[in-house]
Length: 185
Image 1 (tube, rainbow, N blue to C red):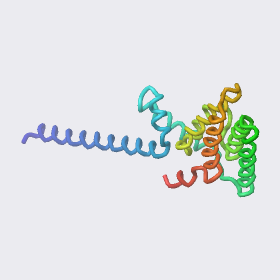
Image 2 (image 1 turned 90 degrees about the horizontal axis):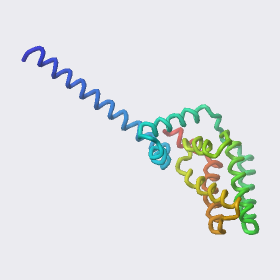
Image 3 (image 1 turned 135 degrees about the vertical axis):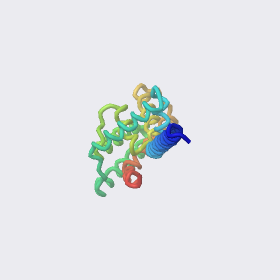
Image 4 (image 1 turned 180 degrees about the horizontal axis):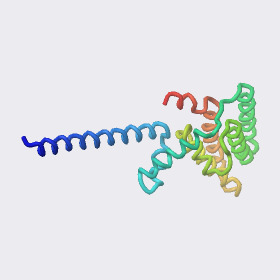
């Protein structure tokens, strides 16, 4: 076998190994993003121009999130918020629209207390998606009903559903807030 042929075989093997390593790296990165963001991964990728652009967006969210000072709650603060949620739920019977608005304000206040920026709903979604991607659909649905209720266009059933949706994110933010999940990743 000539030196040229041997060199061509070796170069081909090296290229194949390098391509396999790159493919494996992309697969692992994609799997980690899917695990971390849950359903938000697919939503972001679908909304982007390409899978790579969507994944870049998710990585940018992670980077921004890492710069935030997200903190757990003291037990006294957690108890205060839990009492606030109980009060909002009790108010729903007599004032469903007001209770939904109060639930939205309470969730926003809890986000702020935990260290999440609260300016702009879309940015809130992006910031929450890193640790709470599995509950974001609840937040989106609740927020949509809250906006309908401002115009007095939400039905009582929609308002009840909004309370259930707000509670899903509220309970997650009130508990470990996704921190235990992040520590395991």
